[in-house]
Each structure stands twice: as C-alpha cells, then as structure tokens.
Image 1 (cartoon, rainbow, N blue to C red):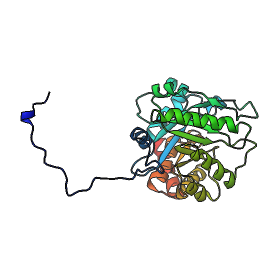
Image 2 (cartoon, helix red, strand yellow):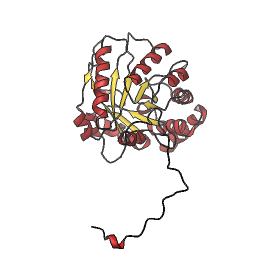
Image 3 (cartoon, rainbow, N blue to C red):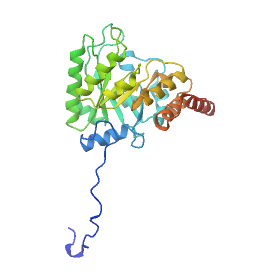
Image 4 (cartoon, rainbow, N blue to C red):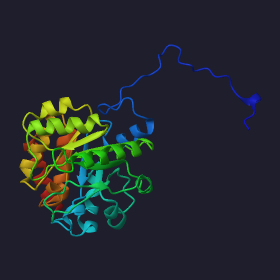
Length: 294
C-alpha cells in the first residue's frame, strides 16, 4: 500500500479551466457508452470522421466470386490500406492474419444464396458470444425493407442491436436491394430512416439522386456501398459524390478487389474520403500508384 506520509499535496486542480465537454466525432453517437464510442472510433477516423471499409463478405451468398477465389492471396495484401474490414467469421479465421489490428465489421446475418429468387428470409447467423471471441467492432445485419422477409429481417436487426448493446458493440444495418425492390431516393429515404429509428448505429446503403437529403434525414452515419464493378474513374466519382453529399464513408468490395490494381484503387479511394481529392485527382493518383506497383 502507498505510504501516506510520503505523498505530496495535490496542487494542479485547474481552477481557472472549466471541465472539458467534447462532442463526439461520429454523428448521433454523443450519448452511447464509452466502449461503443471506442469501437466506433476504430472504424471512423477521429481526424476525418470518415471511413473506408473493405468488403469481402460476398461469399456468404455468392460463393467464390471473381477476385475472392483465394482470400489469403487477394485480400491479405489490401488489409493495411483499409480503415475497417467487412467479412464473415469463417473468412477471418481461415484466411486473414490476426496481426493487422483492423476493426472487423462482422457479417452477422445468414440466409439463402443467389440460387434462390427470394433471398430476403435471413436469420441471425452469429451468436453474440462468438462475435466477442473474434473481437468484432461492429455487427452487420442485412434488412430487406419492402420484401417478403421484411418483418423477420427487421427482427434480426433489433435482436442484434440489443445483444450488441449489452456488450458495447454497435450494429450496422445494411439496406438490401433485391430484384423486386426499388432503387429510388424515395425507397432509400424510407429504408435508411427505418434502420436508424430501430437503433442501428451505422447504416449502409446505395448512392442515388438527391442523396444529400437521405444523409440529412438519417440521424446516424451512412456508409455507401460500392456495388457491382464499374470503371475505376466512375467508382472514384461515386465515392466523391457520396462524401460531398454527406456520407460518412464507403464500403468498397468489387470495385477494389476486381480492379486492375486493387492496392492503387484502395489508396485512391482513401484520398477521396479522407483528403478530399476530386475524381480527376484521385484517378491520377490511381494511375501513378498502378505503375509504381507493377
């Protein structure tokens, strides 16, 4: 025990300085618990308030899609250039080294594969105890607003939000867009707001016209999905437009790992999100990095 006689009298009470009260750098998260803020701060850089997620969870419904045949060969080299990883527990445990110290957004829903026309009937596919074991920073649940499985997928979301909240783990709600669903700003305005109102701490959706209104109406951060592979310049333009319209980041998969130069593409996306580069500037960076890496 410390020797009370040897203690010095405390002096620096800072009586001339009021107690600090800081606003948290992530939209809508001022009042969540310290542990949840810590996890969110690993996903969204404090200096920019934004994130570049690398998504490679496609295999849970698509199998070995192009670019993801060997995760250990294609994804492992990309990990250092992403802010966060969005993946399944199986992919992480078998193919990604546990040395990168990157936050994991764990795909926590499971359901039908692309072989089925109706993929909206998903279930919660990861127990919260296993999410803790794998050290997930966030749980991702797909929600099918407007589809046959709408109600059950919303149930998956709220169950996961409640389970995660008990342990300080945030939940990302993913707005699924199936064959029968709209891809309009009216639809995304509805879907993103519903997910946030039910307690999702982050919402992932697609970019569309009038996106600034969707971002403004959503009380939590919106991350924009990259979607199908498009030309590199177009993907950088999508990223730029999303950020300028209020998105807090992007979650890029096929537009990175199916790129001609995935590392160069991920570096260029980072430059748009965190440094404000325009599409032209970012594409020049991509071309420079691509030739440097050859």
